[in-house]
Figure (cartoon, one colour):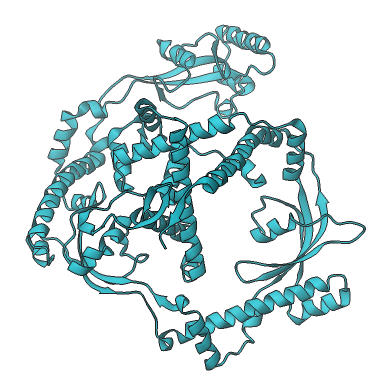
Length: 628
């Protein structure tokens, strides 16, 4: 929990997206075309159903997220125990969310439509130039497979859950002695020696017989299971590809430029230099200093020279106080008013007060509103026309594609020919290995649906994004099955060798740890495997250079005492082993910034603990049943 103190807070949008990925990206009902029966459920919480479709979608989202985040996820996915744990975690999250929703309802906690609307409009993800854009909002939702109604419900749930936490745990506080203790723990560093024992050191000497490999294969068949796969044909419409094929003449582009001149008009701008005197601890003294400089300027002093010598704006002082061009509203209100109030180039303002301090401003240049040369925007205009025409063509083709594939549901060949579109083919596609151009959970849901596999008919239009539309047809199917031994013999052999090498590395680490207080025996063991005793000094809890598991372990070890140094053998998730010996616990002085962070953030950590206790209580009282 200590590490969480230094994590920055996330905005509501991030919480919602994480919620979508991990917990509740569950669009109830996939539609009759996909053959969902509405009967199956994954769990029931006090009579309320978490559907199997909900669970599968949440699981697939979490799996896809982890696949993108971890390069070695495919290896983890081959472990049936890991997959079982992942599924358990996803379902547990869905159950927790259902319990919290029920408790919020029970307590009468509600969120108005206006609150939801305001929250969404304030999300940076949906803003353009600082303002909420409905088109961007809808585009973001569509690309994530959400409707506005569904997203609004997710926001409502999040706001309601936040109100629940505030109502129950909003009074948390932390005592001064607790802040001190936590600060000492967080600032603490540790110095230690360690030995890294790679499992590869032992793998090269391990020999296994065919009989042993066959036995391993039979005992670990889930490891060698080939996933369910389908063969597919598909047609993908892509507005960007259509745009690239559209030719726009210079005359057409220039006509657009003049018809939409207001979009390209250059705004009124000012170019100024300034001298800044920061208020510091004595604002009156700072103001007096600024007024003194103002008098010197009135008496003919050089503005740039004074700026270089006295301005406390470290970014502009060396340049004589010169700022970049800016338009109205870009600067603090008082600064903005003074700068745009100067009439002629060379004019100098009086002392202007802002939250940054006291400014003196000199006007260097004026740009009035004007239409720039066409050439300046030609490339952008051509692209805009291409995009507009492409979207019109895209919508037209989408409609035709939908009609033709519905009229001829058993083939995509004739549709592709009539519309002059490319028919793509992919064989042996599994849930985690789709063609990159159609890699989406929407595609997975469609091609692995029962009806799609059994009937092998064209899908309805699938909107992968606002600019991509897909129609896909399953043409073949293979159930998940265990691969024949002959096919995976080498893999099974390597897995068995690795398993035994890991065990040998772990056993060797235990020997080293036991010999830590016997120097001769310890050195002999090091030399036997060509190992090195490494030193790590002043390692912090949040160290990112060393193995994270080792850092975590070393901070759980008891302090050295009476000349004895605690020693520990550690087995890591990678298969390598370590031996660590704690030399010293260091206690630096806790800085004010860390103390401030703890005082601000620790109450929320306590609230999170109480929140978990609430969940435990709700689970203990709830009627929860699982289907299978």
